[in-house]
Image (cartoon, rainbow, N blue to C red; front, side, top):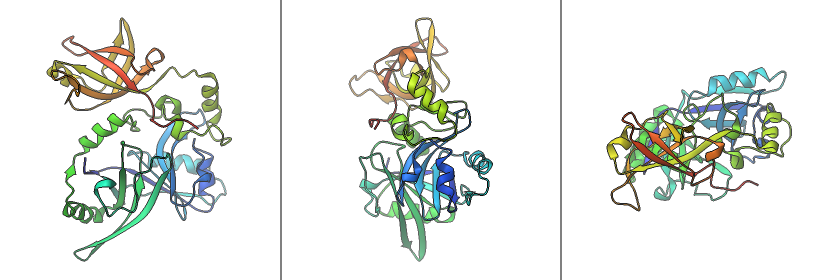
Length: 328
C-alpha cells in the first residue's frame, strides 16, 4: 500500500489549561506523562468501565488532539463536557475540517517522521508548496497497520494538492479496502466495526499499549482493574485466518459469520479481508479476519470452523491476539 486517502476520521481537539487533566480522568492511558508532540493509544471509558471511544491521543501546545475511527467525536465531546465543571477545557470537533492520507514513510523522503519500534507515538508539523499552493498539515505515527505508516492530517481543501504532490513523487495510490486488509492483517480493531460502547476495554485486547494499570483513578477504572486482577474477561478480539481450497466458498464468508468448535459457537467475525493465495500451499486460499473468540479459543493455534450458506466447513485458526509488543 503506497498511500491511501482515509475519507472519514474522528479529529477531536481538547483545548485549555485543564484539558490534559480532564482527559486523564476519563481515559485508560497516562496522558499527563506525554511530552509535546508525543502520543499514545487510549480508551475513553464510561462510569461502568465500558468503551465509549478509542483514540490515538497526541499532546499539543494547547492541550490534546484525539484521532481515530469516524463518528466518535459527538459522544466523546458530550462525555467530556459532562465531567467538566469549572475547569478550563473545551472539546472541539474538527472532523469536518480535516481529512487524512495514510502513507509509508520509508517510501516518502519528505516526512520528518521515521518508523519507531517503540510503543510511543509521535507527531510533527509538515508543510509543502506546490504550484503556488501551500499545504500545512500534521503528521502522526499511528498503530493501525504494521510498519512505517504515518497519517497526514490536512485541511480538506488542501488534501487534493497533497495527493497530487505525493503522486508526483512517484508514489501510487491505493484504496480504502487495501487499508482495511492491512489493518486486519495487523490485528488492529476499528471502533464501530470490530467493537463498540457495549464492550469493555480488555475485550479489544489492547492492554499492552492502551491501558495503564498504574496511573491511578479514572472513570471506569474500578471495572478495568478488577478484570485485570481476576482475569475474568470471557471474550476478546483475535486475528483469525480462514483457509481452504474452495475459493468460491471462502469468498462467500461475510462479517457476522459464526465460528464453531463441535456443537459450540466459539467466535464471530467482525472484519474480513479479501481472498489471497496461501503462501505455503499453492492450491489453498486464505482470508484474514478479526473477530471475537471465547475463552476456549484465546490462544494462537486454536481451531474452529466457519460454515457458509452451503454448509461448506471452512477451517479457521487463531493466529494472534492483541498487539505484538509486550506489556510493561
